[in-house]
Image (cartoon, rainbow, N blue to C red; front, side, top):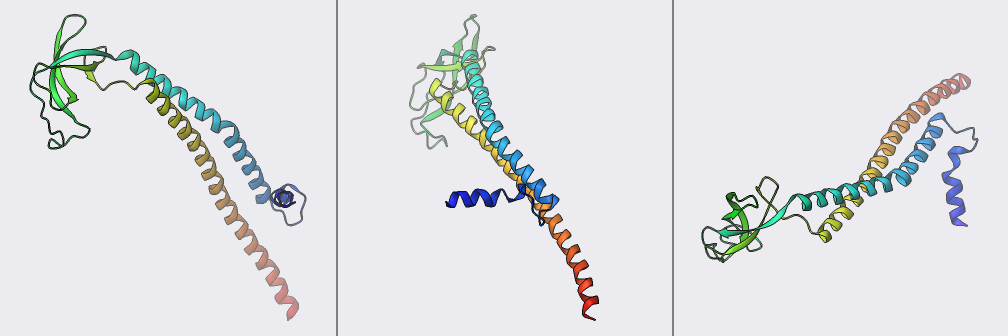
Length: 193
């Protein structure tokens, strides 16, 4: 019973009513459009955001490959003293690319390793060191997050648009009410004198 009353109360702008103004009808149409955008565009934006994120992660996995490198110098044991976290420290490494060229660079490796130790690093097509690509599970989490964020962005933009339009419409309503009160007030003053 209560739900019926709520629906009737929210649909008052659509019924014929002598107190209904143009701004009320316009607000009703804007609200309907906002709900349609949320219901239709929100899920589509979420799916597209997730697909773009998953495609980007797959592309990074395809472009990067692991190579075995050799440490040039010892890596300190105490990574926290060096200002790093997670036990990984930047160290100079050397590796030989698949085309036979030799390269060197700085890569994050585990702390406490000795010079000459073999470590696995990731390179791109130009044999530059890069961070490891996301795993399939990490890519799935990132895609889900991007999908939810995209959908939330559409909902937020639609709601902000509605409330912005509502502020403008309320300002127009107040101005119209003030004008009408001025007209009625001037009529009351003539009748009373």
